[in-house]
Length: 168
Image (cartoon, helix red, strand yellow):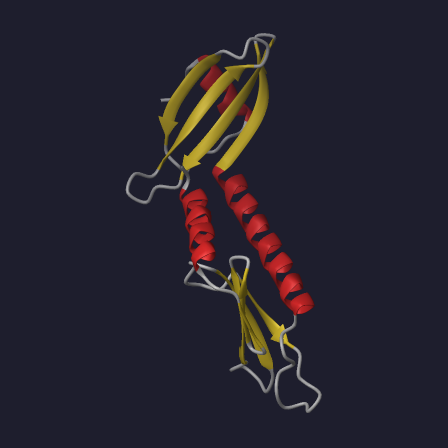
């Protein structure tokens, strides 16, 4: 199980144990907490969105002033729903970007045969490495799979060298 999957599962489990709170400056529901706070950078207010179980906010943004132009506007169901949607989409995009940074793929033709070459970087601080794998596009057979440095670059030339077995 990926660490992000485990974190999401733990957050979901924690969310089932947390009771809903619906106060003007603090809402907790459906696995999320929205907290309105004084914005330390200026005169206004900010809202922080936390996924239950996470120590850092998934999203921080400005919050609207109330009618008195002094205090924050109270949270309401529509605002909370919008914040949950925005924070969820932000986390989804961040997760996708991390996946894209850790996985690269290219196609190469060697001796008339098309191969797909994948580079998967392990997100492991203790044992940094990557796995490069060449697969025959027609048969689906893995013709080569080997460990490389996480800094190894996947290019058309390096992919052809993997297929030919010339990567050391």
